[in-house]
Amino acid sequence: MTKAPSPVGDNALALAVLNSVQNPVILVDPSGHVMFANWEAESFFGVSAAQLARHEISTLIPFGSPLLALIDQVRERRAPVNEYRVDLSSPRLGQDKLVDLYVAPVVSEPGSVVVVFQERSMADKIDRQLTHRAAARSVTGLASMLAHEIKNPLSGIRGAAQLLETSVPDEDRALTRLICDETDRIVSLVDRMEVFSDERPIDRLPINIHSVLDHVKAIAKAGFGRDIRITENYDPSLPSVYANRDQLVQVFLNLVKNAAEAIGGQPDGEIMLTTAYRPGIRLSVAGSREKISLPLEFCVIDNGPGVPADLVPNLFDPFITTKTNGSGLGLALVAKIIGAHGGIVECDSQNRRTIFRVLMPMHKEASIEEPGVAHIITGKAK
Image 1 (cartoon, helix red, strand yellow):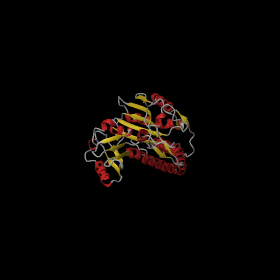
Image 2 (spheres, rainbow, N blue to C red; image 1 turned 90 degrees about the vertical axis):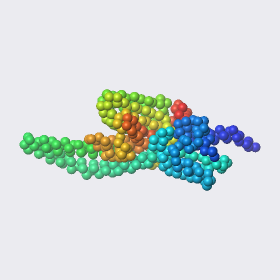
Image 3 (tube, one colour; image 1 turned 135 degrees about the vertical axis):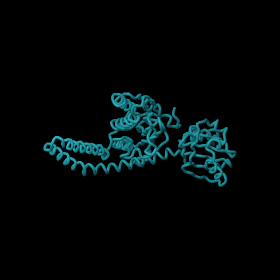
Image 4 (cartoon, rainbow, N blue to C red; image 1 turned 180 degrees about the horizontal axis):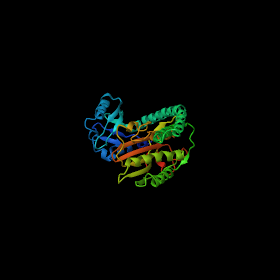
């Protein structure tokens, strides 16, 4: 004989399920009060569920928000609705709060509705990931073409300039040296682009990201970052990342060097390296039908003047640069390497705080019982 489920047990299970959802979820009663909020909703609104219950939804969101009209529409039609790219930016919720909304009636509680918020930042990460991979593929084809069509003629031009140098007057030798120097510079640029055409499988191992970041910090302090304060905020219980160590060193050395160059001679310049566990994002990876989780977050944060807002959306495209003599290939290479590892790299920038954020999968053999990973079950960091 099957035992009837306990209402208390059902409620506890429902609560556990809702708290494990990586999107803010609230229940609004007929009077407009927030009767329930999961953990993500508490984080989204910046207050506890108990405090949310004291407020009507209209006081928590911007005046005249489309969300209020959607709630009324759902109550009237008794059918769910979706609305995309709704702006909830406000002093309470913060700037750039674009969300997708799902609003549905609660059949057993007439007049009550459930609201699910999907922050656009997560959806945009997926869009940017696909854009970065497409950009990397375009550079791959361009690099292959350049290597074949340009390097061979350049070697002939350089050789001819060297021959001329032996027969021209002294006052003209500066011109032949200029030809040699410029051809060398172009060859160097093409060599850098040839990295994009390397499609060989990556040799990967479980890597401790903190050893990589410490190595990068040591290189920076011995050279370009000697006058800049470099700090760390690490999660020591972070599981291994499945990656190629040399390529990760290349990625973070590039990001730290960019941060140092952005700071320049700023007397209070500081670069912070952070690591954290952020569950919630799952993406498709090229060559695989499976979706993988990207819970490992590694950030390079600087207090420089920031990236111009018009460049941020295309910052990882090839030939996009803010440097006077930059080639615009460094960040494109970063995007290619991280994309080849199944991850994402993105930039959030404002004056005095620029964050380059890398999201990557952890090593598949990492058990959820490892320290720092047990919270996968609940979705909350311990």
